[in-house]
Length: 255
Image 1: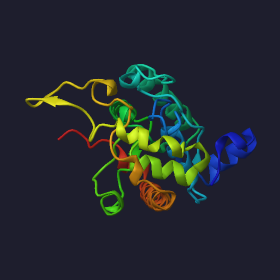
Image 2: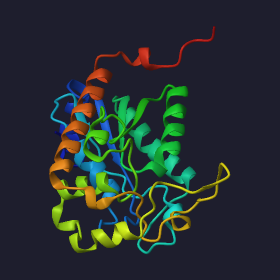
Image 3: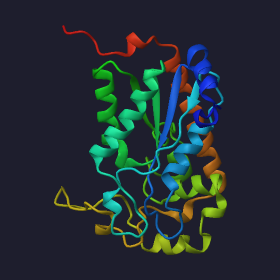
């Protein structure tokens, strides 16, 4: 695993010219994750998965820590930027990498609120033939591991899955004594609907503790398995990108 910020400009030039095919950008958020998990849960997970790569053909960029988190704003410590700001900022980072010749990129995302903005960024960069950027959530390709470990499909918020991941990556940041408190005030699932209409725009609309799910079901061992599966899938994605010429990743011509 190579970290761009640890290279000199000369070393970076050599890497971009001779070895690196794909740049990987971790992105997450600084937002409430209930009373048991740290505010940096999302970017810590994304960063760890990105840095788990062991490939000579990729380089990991510095993490973008703050994302689109206005829906957590009622909880202390949450930071956020507007979706358009995030979209432009990430897009300009990726474009700057492309200007050095690395035009195939992966954004390893750790926060659901970033998804729409990252998709728009990727479409714009591709449409302008600047770069091909694949947005990728670390939990999006678990191959049934989420169901096997947690009896759930997909991720909640400050739930067993996120609790497990942080317990594996940074056990000292999990406030074990507060996990039951987090679950007692948690929503059963994400969001709130009335007669089919989404009315839970903010997390405070449906969760007292800020959590959604069952954090007491988490463990460091489950987190290890999540982490290893995620790194393996990211490795496969980067491998897929390295095998494809840049022009083959661009939009199809008009028919």
